[in-house]
Amino acid sequence: MIQYICPNCFGALDVVYRDLDNIDLNPEKIASRGRDLWRYIELLPLQDPRNIVSLGAGFTRLIKSIRLSKKFNLKNLYLKEDITNPTHSFKDRAASVAISKALEFKLNAVGCASTGNLAAATAAHAARAGLPCYIFAPVGVEKEKLSHALSYGARIVLVEGTYDEANWIASRFAEEESIGIVNVNIRPYYVEGSKTLAYEICEQLGWRTPDHIIIPMASGALLNAIDKGLNELKTIGLIDGDVKISGVQPEGCSPIITAYRENRDYIKPIRNINTIAVSLAIGNPGDGVYALRTIRRTRGTAVSVTDREIIEAVNDLARLEGLFIEPGGAVTIAGLKKIVEEGLIDRDEEVVCLLTGSGLKTPHIVHEHALEPLIIKPSIDELKKIIGVEKIA
Ligand SMILES: Cc1ncc(COP(=O)(O)O)c(C=O)c1O
Figure 1: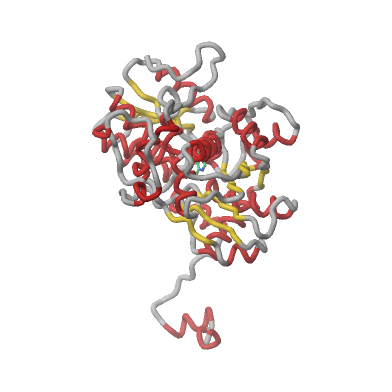
Figure 2: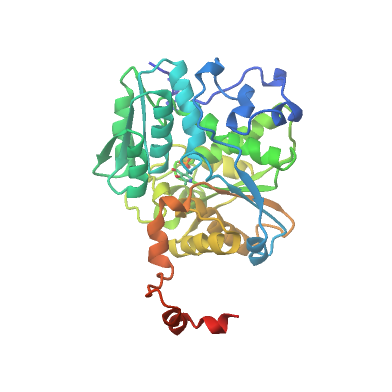
C-alpha cells in the first residue's frame, strides 16, 4: 500500500527533497534541455527517467498583456497561458508526473476523481503508458470533457452526486493495492507536476520572481503547489524575493474564500453548488486549509467572483488578448479586477494570472453569451442588407 496520508495527523503528505542544497542545477543547464516540464527533472520525484510518461506538457507561454493591462491600469500584467498542454489544461502536468510515478511503483492501473479536466489528462497519459484508466466524475460534469476522456479509452463512472461523493468512491477504490488514483493515493506526485508552473514563470521572467501570482482554486492543491515550487527554487538559490499568492473561487462554490473572510483556519464544506465554473466545483476542498495558510503567509488575498464577472473575464481575454479560456481558468482575471478595485495591487507591480484551461472545453459558454452567427444565402446583396458592408470601410 502506498503511504499518502500521515499516520499521526491524517494530513496529506508532500514530497520532500532531502538534498535540495546539493542539487547541481543552473539556468544554463535548464535552458539546454527540452521545452517541457521534465527539463526540471532534478526537482521531480522520479528515480528512473525511463519511467517518464510524457506527451509534452509544460513550457507554455507567459504573455505580457497589452490591452487587458490597459483596462486595469497596470503596467506589468502577465498571463500564463497554460492551455497548450496535450489535453488543454494545466492538469497534464499533474498527470504526467503522477502516472510516471505509477509506472515506477509498478501499478497495474490508474484513475482519478475529476471535475472535468483531470479526466482527460489522466486518460491521455494512461493511454501513453499503456495502463487501464478509471475515471470517477459527478453526473453534472461538462460533456465535452467526458468525450475527451472517453476518446482515450478510459472507463468512466458517473456518480449521481457531487464531486466530493465521486471523490469518496475513488478514494475507496484506491484502497485496491494495484491502482494509482492520481488525486488520492498518488496525490503527492500529482502536486509535483503542478509546481512546475512556478518554475516556468520564474524562468520565463529571466529567473526572477513576480510580485504577485493569482491562482484559480478548487481543492486548493494548485495554489499550494505554486508556493512549494517557489520555495524550492529559493532553497537552491535560483531565485530570491517574496511573491504574494492570491486565490480565486467562483461565488457559487467558494468555501475557501468564506473561511478567509471569516478569519477561520478551517473550512466548512458546502453542498449547494451553483457556478458556470464547473471545473472549480469542489464543496469540500482537500487542500483548502493549506491554501488559506499559504495566502495569509504570503500576504496575498482571496476573492470570489460571480458568474457574470467570470463571463466578462472570458470575453475580455478573448476580445482583448485573443485567448480563449474556460470559465474555471478565467476566474483569475475576474479576481484581478476585484483585487485592483480594492486597491490591493500597485500599478507597477508585476502580476501573473494563471489561465489554466482552454475555452474549447466549454463551447456552450460562447453560444449562451455571445452574438449568434448570421445565416445568409450566398448573396452579397443579402449580406449588405444585414450588416451594411459598404458602411464598414
Ligand atoms: C481549469 C482549472 N483550473 C484550476 C483548477 C484548480 O485546481 P485545484 O483543485 O488544484 O485547486 C482546476 C481544478 O480542477 C481546473 O480544472
